[in-house]
Image (cartoon, rainbow, N blue to C red; front, side):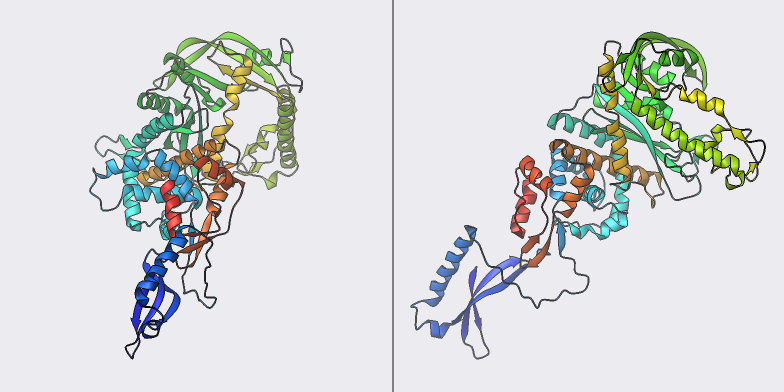
Length: 577
């Protein structure tokens, strides 16, 4: 606060108390707090009015520093101009804290020196990462909404698109960097790692063409967007992702591969690269039955690693099925479930030049588990499919080859027209033999492992952690809206999923800091709602608080309870985080 001297049209000097502040855009402004009076009249009361009121201004400023309650005068007649948006998010400050702990700004600053670019890699990556968590949208929409944060971002939309190629180039280096930072800051147990695959579909109808060498016709680079088996039953091209996470559910690394590739062959390349780049020792890989192949088992043990894979009982060989359902050797549990186990040798064939020619033998522990809940769920699922099969038998004209998926397996004599896909109405009937055969294995499943010394309870406990990676995929598809509808270049697709990966790492670390008390959706919602609106001068009004923010205050040693904050205080919060 200070004293302002101003003259009227007659030359008389008028004194006022004036307060300096910065508006919502950060520009310096001034506002008259109190009118004092004309200098010639004040000289009748004070020997030196200017000195007197300067001292008074100083005293009032000191009182303000003591943070005593102040009155905020608001002009109720103030109007909003067109396209005004005074609301700012501050929840991103918590994400920024973890971003800095991971030393990502330092990483990108080092890379910045090696590129000839006017834009800042770190600034763009921050915006894309925070927005992917709090407000997932296209790159264009993210750029248009960049002013929703307190931090100013000075780059263009073209700069964002140009930066994607750099992010693609550095993605593996960043994964290694993040591993060492997580290990240093939070500790990381890599004795057990969980691996699984999923895929993301595109809204196009054709595959991308591979890059071919015109001289010899060999593939130079295989493109990503290809039609394959979609986990969401889409018929459009997909891209596949393999993800490896640690025992805390924090992602370690990932890789993308073409949609027409088999996920069965995706494990070994990512595991070899991760062990090399992260300098890991023995790793026990946990995966579902899709990754339970002879090659994965053999090469895993050859590299002195371990595995814990699920094993289908219904689809196993005759000897395994007979052992699994034979009611001998089971240990009963109070909930009606039971289990048994054995250690046995298993002959497997290894792929050589695309053919299974090389035979070898491995020793593994096989744990057979029966669960009444699983049996009930399996029966309900099959009953729904059988009902659809019965409807197909009664009215074949309602179905085609595409719409009869699932039910077709329970129908005898089912044939399709090769051109139209329509059902050729023959003597259709329900395959009762197949149904009776499947019923034998309801409730049974198996886990096979190289870890012979571990107990069945330990093996089940290790395998149960696989849900964490399934949840991670759900987060990328639902909370992060990761399906890249508007991307076509492989480099941009790679950069997109790289940003999703780093966003997932930050969010998982935050969950861990909060001791996994809250769901992912609730945490994101809380950070998204911790926002404020500019009301007057440099004052902002906050209108949201919940139990998650209270927990964040304890973990991050910060106060987020104030209803009104000055721009200066908000900057202090950002500096603290």
